[in-house]
Amino acid sequence: MELRQLNYFIKAAELQNFTEASGVLYITQSTLSQQIKQLEDELGIPLFDRIAKRVRLTEAGKTFLPYAIKTVKDASDGKDMLKDLMNLNTGTLTIGVTYGLTALLTKAIIDFSQKCPKIHLDIVFGTTQELLEKLDQSHIDLMLSFSQEEKSGSYKTQRLFSSCLALIVHSSHPLAAKKQIGIKQLDKLPLILPSGGFSIRNYLNLLLSRHNLEPIIQMEINDINMLLQLVDSGQWATVLMGSSIFNHPDLKAVKITGDGMTRLATITWPTGSYCKRSATIMAELLAGHAKDQMLES
Image (cartoon, rainbow, N blue to C red; front, side, top):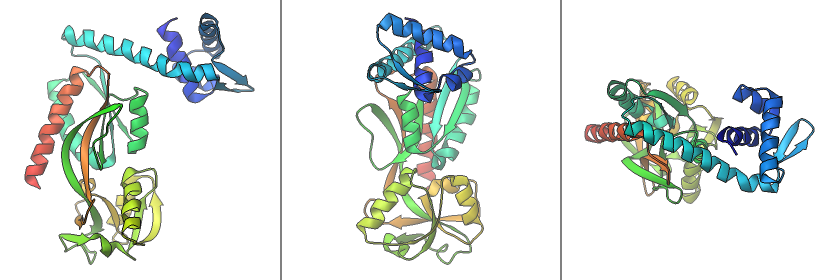
């Protein structure tokens, strides 16, 4: 059993298509099929059901997949550990981030590039759920996101700072002059909101239901940058974390008061995995800039 075969198996399981998987892996389909067949022969059981042009995992394949992922991750962790021990300032650090923490990460990246100029950074944007899935699959080394409570179980978290939900409006909006509003003032207020894939939207729905509020939801968008551009036009308002408006000087964040309005900005890692030295350095820089942000606010 070879790591190459496990990598091929994992990618084919993810895409459920040998042709697509071979393209992503930059190998021929015949090579992929041959290597997976050799893996199945060694294990003595089929891992895939071949159905027309698509494939799907057998029960054995579903059982074997998490072990294959862990084996590949352990091998990668061992390689990273040796690089760190040998003081090699090379490698890749992959960071997942939700939009509201972009400004914080940008500051940390500028400092990181001075400390670790040879480390290649790969920045991945997504919703909290999307990034957690990537963390589970070892596609990212750490993630930055907001949540209501510290994650547990298969994750370990480092708290950076706490922040309140905010009504985001253009400076010309009637509510822009206020420093804070109660959540009940959202009732019947025309809003455009992030779509349901965003954790902030799911949590907002819970809060609105808890307070029996029904804002007028005129639009739902799965891209935060576009949402903010529309709010910047002065025609709409939205609810996000106040840190989301870093690139929009004409927008105002009006703090929403009430129970449960606070969310935690956190760094999240998978438990049981080797933490790269580059990841530790990045976490220290993020914590430092988060402390500065709290002092400024």
